[in-house]
Image (cartoon, rainbow, N blue to C red; front, side, top):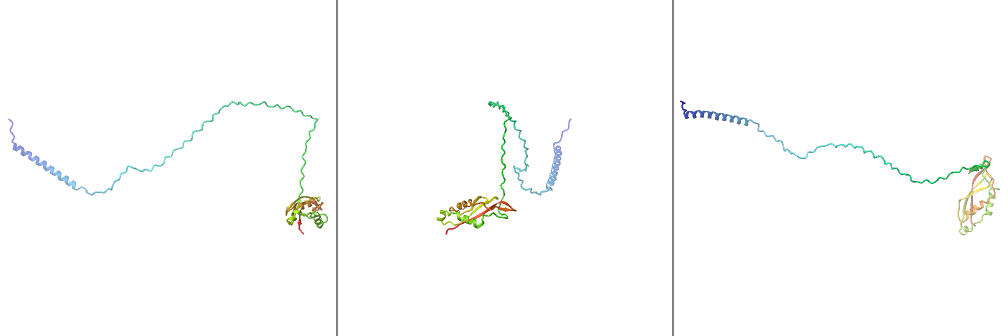
Length: 219
């Protein structure tokens, strides 16, 4: 026969267990509270953290290698038929040369070199009879142009000419004139002059330039 348990005795035993559990729980709370209070309550300010959705990055430029251009296509050769009609070319007949016919070759005459014309020589050209005879010849043959008289034109006309090695007067021309017909009259009379005594250089007659002033005056 199983003995009966007393409910009061059973409750007393459980009370002791609850007391131990409560005591253990209180001890744990004290320990946790002590650990929590011993922590470093210092606050650290990390500043405001700004997060941007735009991120700037320096990206080095990308070098693109240039590809060489493709070679040009070869030219197309078009074959064109030559439709040009060539006319009949004349046939050159053989030319018979008569051996008895003499062929004359004209030789060009050699151009004679123009002798030098001196400006000043050892012995200058001279009119036959001297300077007085020359002026006498001029005054005798010169006629005062009517146009120059009417317009009272006076002055000196300079005539330049060459006295050749043979004494002839050549290449006469007006070097300086006064107009009114005086220039043409002076030139006409100079070309009428007789042969001069040629100028000489080292004892040989030579061509010499000569300038002659002719004065026109009205009385």
